[in-house]
Image 1 (tube, helix red, strand yellow):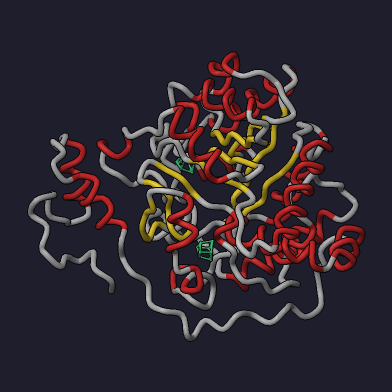
Image 2: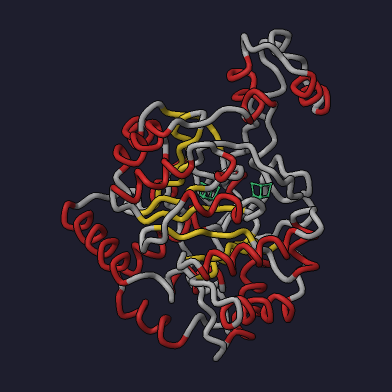
Length: 398
Ligand code: SF4
Ligand code: SF4
């Protein structure tokens, strides 16, 4: 089914308005993370590595509404953690639909069947189910046998009740390209999902499995190999043509993290959904006080291998507006899968990575009674317990 006409129309009108106003930086999709807690523990996940006190934090319904209204983006992605674990997720979604926001509610679908009655089908609501490949591959990636069957059954049920359902597939080094191509054909034509979000795995510094993340060169080649096998298969890829062309190495973009700002229980996260380098209290403060020029591939070490949508889909959309004919040509012929690639950004001048995650954790944990699991969290990282951390601890910039 693809993106509904009403969404294309409203988002197009929003973009046009921003351009007419001369706004250089504006949000396109709000990444609203109402909690970090999840009911899975995938090896590639960098979102759930927190002590209990932080995993138990939730954004309230009002905080979610305030974030959406303050930000003003026409689309809202609700990732996590697992958003369906939030007791008020039904109310959050209802309130955002009322405000005519296009919502992508991300879920691993383990409890989707149980929670489906909280929602009503609407062109404004799409479930985005984490599905990393066929049964064997998905179960391996989410470290849970049976995860694939539960997710596929939940997708079928949601579709039968009239909901829109996309899948989100994250790809890591070493995936089997022909199998992944068959999987995309299966989800498009048999499972009949409304869209596929295909994402290269971002190397979270805190993900337990650090071996299988892709460098940009490998990412580009992987997407070329996959797209080559997709010719004529009419996969329902849910990205702009130029973003797909970027993934295939044919466009060189700079990151535009403000296009997908992130709000989570810590606040407004700088610079993006993937990297937490500090938090602003308001969206305005985020936009006005973040040193945007110090982030992105070639500028900051942590961004070296990043090609994910929250940094680059906005860049592709901006390019589409500037060069509509180029975008149309790519749309008609599909991403180019051979020939020379666009030049890579220079990585040699990137500033070194700062290690800030633990600093935020200490800040959030001060004056909090520690559970046994919290203590284990610090011990497992060989960190002193809150209150005993050194003045300039290992969490300072390295
Ligand atoms: S389902 Fe998503 S949030 Fe949960 S552990 Fe896996 S990657 Fe992380
Ligand atoms: S390149 Fe952009 S989106 Fe990627 S980690 Fe850096 S700031 Fe975030």
